[in-house]
Structure formats: C-alpha cells, structure tokens
Image (cartoon, rainbow, N blue to C red; front, side, top):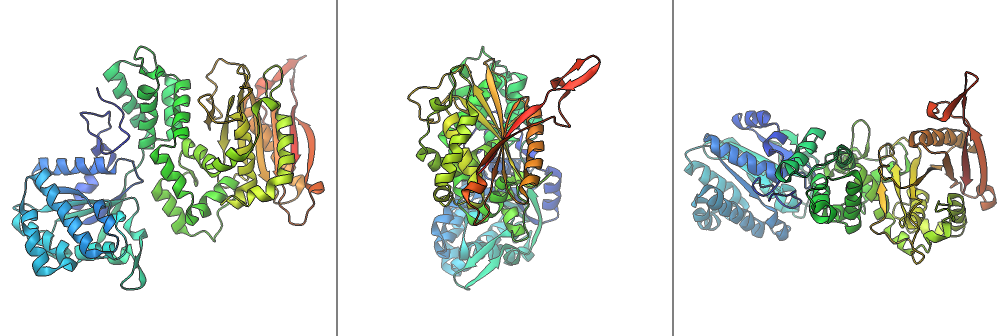
Length: 572
C-alpha cells in the first residue's frame, strides 16, 4: 500500500505523488538544454527538488537524445575547505552514480589517471572532459546540493565548470543544472586562500537562467489527497481538505506530513471506513508541532540567525520593513521558504506562523507558573479579564527581566503575552494568530472549550487537547460549546488617544469577523522614563462598529437597531 512521503525522493510505486515533471517548466528546461545553457534550479528544502531532478534524468535518458546523470554531491560537505578531499568525494559520487543509473564504468576507470596526471585542482574539469569525449551523445549533468559545499571547495567546483564551458558539447557537458536552496547569484563565498568574499555570480558568470520550484497549488494538494481516496476508499470531508490546504499553503512536506499523520499515525484515521474530518486535521497539525519534526526543528534553528531575526521580528511586530534591512535578507528568507513576498511580505503558511512565536517562547512557557484552573469560572467559561489582569501584574513586575531574555527583544512584549496565554490556554483551548508587516498589531483569537474542564493538576503543559491554529473564519467544527475571545496587541507608537481609537476600531472589526462579543485591546507602552503608574490602566468602551455585521442587528418598528459591543482596553 502506498503512503504519503515525508522523507527522501518520491517513488510512485511506494508513495502518493504529483508527477514531478508537472512541477517544473519542462518546455523551458528543454529549450535551455537544447541551447547548451548552464542554469540553476532552486527551491526550499523538502519541496521536491530531488524528485524533480531524478524524473528529469529519466525523462531525458528515455528520449535518447542525451545522456543525463543526476548526482548529489552533499557528501563532499564534510571535506569543508579541503579541496583535494572534496574532489575525491565528488568524483567518486559521479562515478558511482554513472555505474548505477547509466551502467557506464568509464568515469570510475578514469579517476586514477585523472588525479595522477592533473591533480585535484583540475580533476572535475578533466573527468567531465574525458567522459564527454567518450560518450556518443551529449552529456547533461544535474548537480544537486551544490550549496552544501563551502568556501574554496565551492569556488573550485564553480570555476572548474566555468573553465570547461567553451568545450561543450563535444568535450564538456552540453548542459549543467546546479540545484540547491538558493540562487547562485546570492552566494557570498568566503575564500580562505584569497582572504576575500567571492560572489556566486562572479565565480559562475556563465549562468543563463534561474528557475524555482514552487509549492503545490490547491488543485495539486487535492489531487494528492485524492490518490489516498482512490487507493483506500477513505474519504476526506471537504472541510478537511480545505483545512490541509489552508494550514500548509501547499508546502509539499507539510502537506504530506499532515496527511500522513492523520491517515497513518492517528488511530482514528487508520479506520478506512471513517472519513477524515476537519477536527482530525487540527489534531494532526498540533501533533506535528508538539513533536517538532525535523523539518520544523530546522525552522527553529534558522530563527536564531541574525539575518532571519531582522526580517521576522518586524513581521511579528506588524512594523514596516525599514531601509536598514538588506534586500538580501528578505531574499534569503524567501529562498528558505520562510516568507512569501506576494501579495505582501508575510510568513509562508499558517503552520509556520503558529510555530514561530511558540518556538521563540518555548522556554518562557515552561518557566511561567500558571494553572488553567485559576481562570475557569464555575460554568466552564474562561475568565479572560482575570487572566489579563494577572498578566498585567506579571508584566509590571517581570517584563524587563523576561523581555531581555528574548533574542527578538523588539517583539518581546507580544511574545511574552503569547507565552503567558499559551501556558494557560493549552489545557482546554486553542489560539489563532494573525500578524504581518504593516498591520501594526497582532490579533489573537482564543477559542475555549467550555464543556472541557481543565485538569486540576494541570500546569498548562501542551497536550493532545491543545489546538493552535490561525484561520479565524473556518475553525469551529466541533459541536462543543465554545467561547471566543478576541485579543489585539499593539505597541504605542504615537499618541495614546490615537492608538486607542485605531485599536478599538480594529478590535471591533476582528470581533465581527470572528463572531464574538468579547474583545480586549492590550497596548504596550515602551516609552523610556515613563512610570508604571502612567502605563498601567484599564478602561471599557462601548461602541457600535461602523462595519458591524448586520447579523448583530434587529428590526424594531422597521428601524434597524444594532447591538453595541464592549472592548476592554488594557495599558501596560
């Protein structure tokens, strides 16, 4: 039985899959190869690059016009800047794959003489020259993980390829495709020998094009899920399919991981007679986050990088990107798949959007001593006023100490609030988050399951009953009685009156969109020298939103009367 693949290249015999060749512009690629061009194919990790390259190799060899070889040279990464060792590793990889895929022993037989006569500085060039001359057809070489090489090793590989460019196709490959995470033009390569930074564009100025493999589109996500339906007969409810698309935005690993979790890991999902529901997808998503799968753990590791912080921090804050942030930083995060640039710069998908603040505050959450039971009323509803009041006091006493512990200090107040809230909500609810550049706020929607009493012994540790999501329009599929609470977080930038006015309007709009009458606006004042007595306050505003949903209005004597909503404003 086939399954959803989450590790390594896709194999259609074992895995549900989208045709890899349909994910690349095969017409453009064939044109570039026919024109004897050298080009780059790049994409974020675990998006299907290797599967596409292997499929392209088999396609070209089946056509019979070219001899095509795919080679992953990541093994040479261990050689670091030992160019000699790296050349041995790369050429042995080429030779081994030529034997395996092409049944051609020539590269392996030629290696000894190449190193004896020419040395490692020209070994790759000589190997490709001799092999191209030996072959009856033009050679096409697909080199994967090119950006795993570093320093002088990477410079040597690029320059050796460049130096043979004029000999193609009779004595050098007709076309070479370099595959990695980033476009080679964005490489900044430190040369220990030359004691300077060499750009990728300089070392490989023969590149004709850069092509990028994108995420799945919605049709492709649904087609992949349909493969499971055809194979097993197990159905996906429409809302479950839509939620998988929403959570992942088509990121291939996330799509496969979420589908595998719900269909193969979860006991409920293994029953092929039961359809996959939206609630099961939510449970599966939370399981992935809690386990911190390798793909997600790599995301956490990237968050520690300074150039990542320079872009992600203003996104969390809702700021505008300033001119001090290099374009290269934005492009770097785009290449990593952390953000997308259209229609505006934002975190790539809701799962990443959820993971980022949780990973940035995981240690903080563990250190905050708060019990859910403290804030639950006798009727099972959450006393959010009591909770925020407790956070207000906590923030006053401990904010300087806690915020300084964050690497993302500018976003410290918002992160600390989310950590405190997550600690309490975990045992009986979920939090949706919306944030992004230019929003000037972070919107939180707390969904509390009133029918579920928190464990008296619970300290708020995350468990299977905790759901964290980001879709404020489609989450409520449970029949349980739920309480929805909107919390808007804003930093004080201008006057307090203007911040309150804008914040109340935005909070009301979000309340209407989420269908709730309970809303809170929290304003963090980071003005230096201002006393806590000036910062701390609580007030209420009753206001009728200009864009209020008419569902909240009633007709009295043929006059439409709309209910006022209350927003509680907290200063700290």
